Image 1 (cartoon, helix red, strand yellow):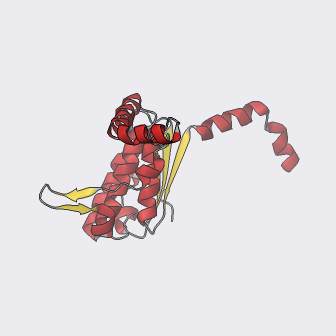
Image 2 (cartoon, rainbow, N blue to C red):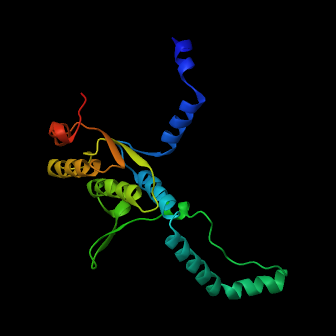
Image 3 (tube, rainbow, N blue to C red):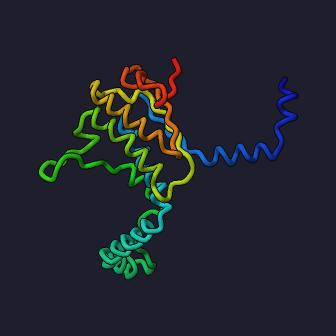
Length: 198
């Protein structure tokens, strides 16, 4: 059987498969959603933003502002060491983005999403971050989400709202969502809206 299969796999077909796989971004969200999930997603968000020319131009302005504010430091180094040395941000800001957080609340009360908010509110941010990554103008290709137990840390009403959100998101051409769940909010979705496997 192995020999018969290999006869049909031509270099041309392999090229098509590679092209298809290169066009897919897979995002896996485990059942336990910790700070590292947010770090990974914010790093992926940077990868999409870095492709945007307007974002790149705004970084140039940021770099020039840093250089202007540290001109005295650069002059001191040049005088004492006789070399030109200026502070420059890294070319890859993904580590910076991984350290970002969300301020949640209103203008009177700001709370850190990952340090001060409960797991339920944190979990509800994840599909929105994934949507942003998939729908950003610089994002290309198709996005497949593997989402384990999105109902974790949600009360039943919140799980139903989350299930509705996932159904709406899955209508988009560039997204396919695979979910594992123990919640009736997800496994009781009407058949035309979701395919279910038990």
